Amino acid sequence: MTFWMVIMNFDNVDVYDYGHLGVVAGFIKQVGLIDYIHHVIPKTKPCHVSHGQAVAAMLLNALGFHSQALYLVPEYFSDKPIDLLISPGIYSEHLNDDVLGRTLDAVFDYGVSSLYSELAIKTLNTLSITPKAINLDLTSFHVDGTAYNDNTPDDTDKFIRIVQVYWDPSLIFSD
Image 1 (cartoon, rainbow, N blue to C red):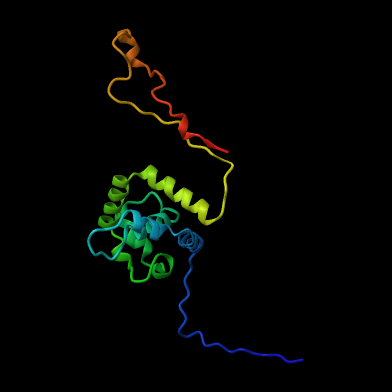
Image 2 (tube, rainbow, N blue to C red; image 1 turned 90 degrees about the horizontal axis):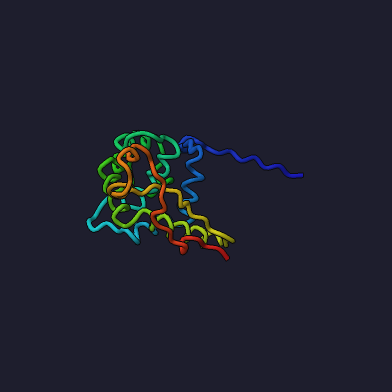
């Protein structure tokens, strides 16, 4: 019987505690979120951080340091291996509130719901998941102008009236 002993020198090894962020970052990379957002919402000027990388940073931040102002994101990432979690060449000071704010503006201009839907479909395709049904939450409030007509008595404007404003049956998918 032969036994082998391996002696390793750990003097030049950096150890990071990823926590759950490693799993989330791995998922982000597996589905190609960063590249997809960079493709559909490109930046027009040279920059350190693409919109895709900024969205990935905000997702990672939201899962570990939520309910904080954007200006605290660099502090959150100051002890994280950003080069492994997001992309090489990005440092915590690159993930400032100006960069993240411009990304949020760009996502809004593109269409948050559209981007979300596209990423959901891309994720399903990447993971080879075929859903039997897709449900959309149609429970939302939408008010434009006054919520009552001129024929209602004056005292009813103190109450909320629930009315059907719009309905689009094409929003329901099923096979």
